[in-house]
Image 1 (cartoon, rainbow, N blue to C red):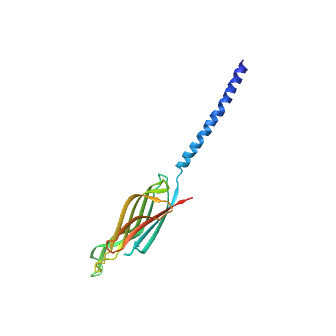
Image 2 (cartoon, rainbow, N blue to C red):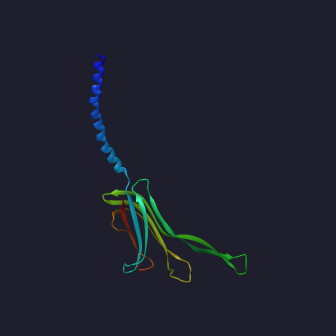
Image 3 (cartoon, helix red, strand yellow):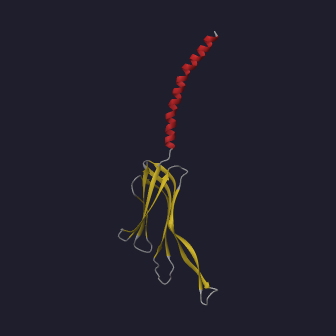
Length: 190
């Protein structure tokens, strides 16, 4: 009787095992789909900053590139520029007679892009983007010898079609009839 009870238990266990195994296998595709869904995508971004003349033709163009990920923990930035000295004061020096010492303050000019919250949205790339573009303009009064700094800043959330150049920003110049334009192209990295 004991053998019969043991055999029936083993038989019941063996019959119960395949459905349990099939149920586990059935859950694996869902788990794999979630894992694939959570895997970040990577993109190569190319920013082009152009100064345009009054006719809309480029007179100066600069290109900046970076790679980004749709991983929520990822953010990116591009920083490039120069430090420009600005005379802030002068005083008589302690050395030779008539010597003047000049004090300077330095101002950063250049291009800064801050890239955050990168998401895939229906074959487009959603980005929270902040940018600052500054440069030295020609002074209207040559006697001053102080540089004039042009600045353009903006922050926005944008949808960029993948693999297509898209104008992000355009602004007329205050000191000329030209304008500034920024485009970006996002290309998937395989």
